[in-house]
Each structure stands twice: as C-alpha cells, then as structure tokens.
Length: 367
Image 1 (cartoon, one colour):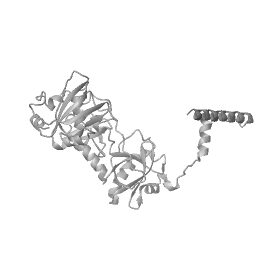
Image 2 (cartoon, rainbow, N blue to C red; image 1 turned 90 degrees about the vertical axis):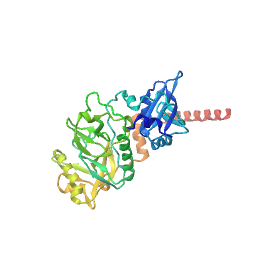
Image 3 (cartoon, one colour; image 1 turned 180 degrees about the vertical axis):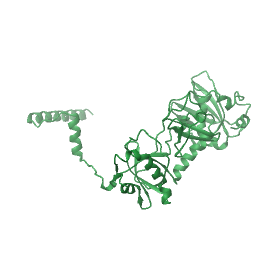
Image 4 (spheres, rainbow, N blue to C red; image 1 turned 30 degrees about the vertical axis):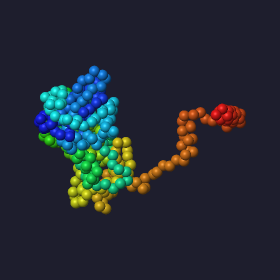
C-alpha cells in the first residue's frame, strides 16, 4: 500500500462526496470506493443534518478515472445510497480534514463479520461449442450420489479471461481481509492469501483440503491464510462449472467407481493430445448436462463401450410436446371445478356474459 503522503497529495485523484448517510463511517465509504481501485485516503466528516460529507483520494489517476466512469450525472448510486461525487480540485494534505488519519488506521476497525458464503457455480452457454479442461472435482450437494458429475474449466475464452483477470487484480490489491471468528466452515467459501499479492477464492471441501474455485485445483487447508470473501467479490460465480454427461444411464456397479472414472476423464485430453470440447445440451438442476468430445472421439460413447453405462444421444432421446388445449385442460382439472354441460348452467353463464356487456356499454356512454 502506498504511504499516506502519496495518497494525500496525488493530483486529480481526489473526490468530494456529499449525501453520505448519517450512519456511515470511514469504513463504509472506503468499502464503496475500493470496488473501483486502490484507496489512499478516506474520511467521513460529521454534519448536523441527516447527511454527511466525505473525502476520498485514490492511489492512482487510473483508479480515479475508474470512479468517474461509474458516475451517473455525478452520482454514485447503489443499494440504499446515492452519493454526489465531484472532483476535489484543491486536493492537498493541508486541505483534507484530519489528514493524519491514514488508510492503515482506518482499516484497524474493520466492518462486522458476515455469515457463511456459498458462491454460485458458472453456467455454460447452451448449444455452443466451447473449449474446456476437466479439472479436479469440486464436490457439490447439487449432485446426488448416483449422478456422475465432473468439474470443468472453460479455457481460451477472451471475455471470460478478462472478467476473472480483472477480478483477481482487484482482489490482490484489496486493502484488508477479515479473519473468521473460528474457521472457514466445510462446504463454504472464503479467500486464501498465498502471499500479500496473491489472493484467491476457495471452498473448504474437507478438514484438510481447500478448492480453488477459479482454477480447479485442490490445495492444503491453512487456517491462518483463510479469510472472509469481501462482499464485492461474492456476486461473481465460480469459474469452474459443475457438469454431467448428457444421455448416460449408469449401472449400479459403476457408481462406486465414479471417482476413478473422473480421474480417467481428467487425463483423457492429455492422452488424446488435443483440446477437449463441450456442448451444453440442457440443465438438470444446478448441473450443466454436456456432450464432451475430443476430435471425433465422444466420451459418452467410449464409456458405453466399457459396459458401465448406456448412452442415448440427445437426438434419440424422447421429447414431449403438449398442445395449448391439453395444457389448459390439465390446469383446469387441477385448480377448478368440472364445468357441467347442463343446458341450464350454459344459459345462466350466457346471461352473466350479457350482463357484463351491458355494463361495459353503460360505462362507454358515461365517457
């Protein structure tokens, strides 16, 4: 982190903030602006009315420009706040209130600890050929024990690479991480600080193991290196995706061997000396149902030849189509009484319709 003197005097990187909620402190304001880059100075100055003033100085011109890009007519709008942000033209240590309070001191009073976090899994695009890598398996409660599931990582995709690289760049420059009260719970997510400039999102999968949810690798659990995920990084889904093989029906004898089959599949691309491709055919709950292939070799067909499962390609699977009338009849049978064909009932219904028509005519005349 830059020194306080660097932060206080950086030209064209300071902001004056109005409409700061009265219940906010320095940390709340810092938390908003750190989403756009590195914050060198942050201060909330109390006011007598319902709102407060704030002062922020970013650590670089690029970080300050990122703030400006996210303004809408000079406003930074979020959940339960609308900050009026303007450039602080006369930025300087002598003009900032209580400039001796550095960001390091601000961060000595971190925010309240949050509850357990469970990141959502990435969805793969439907009916699109993408390049993937089968990575270490991430256990999931979404996959039943009799469902063969594997974990894949999308590769060679410029848009995805840019998104996650930007996230990790911001995460690696994050000012402070908040420790857990006790430990990262098994089945939940946090961040793992390998070094001061290497921070990665993880899920604890056992008493001794963590899973890097954006890299597809299993590492050892170290309590001292695990921290809570900052809220700004919780909305981005894991880079790895939970998948199943479409069209396969497994024998009971094969189910105990799922772990061994995953190991073979993970090495399959290397054995074929080619890139694996996947096409998502549909979804089963939180699982992407894919067709995985390498050149002309289709994984499902290879597994079927081993005699451990049955394979039915998507174009041969039964499809169900219902007419609109059939769906309406089914719905009516479930939620309404059966309509009688009795002539008196029909006449009564027609009278009611005529009454509605008369009422509409009267309303039309009044206008």
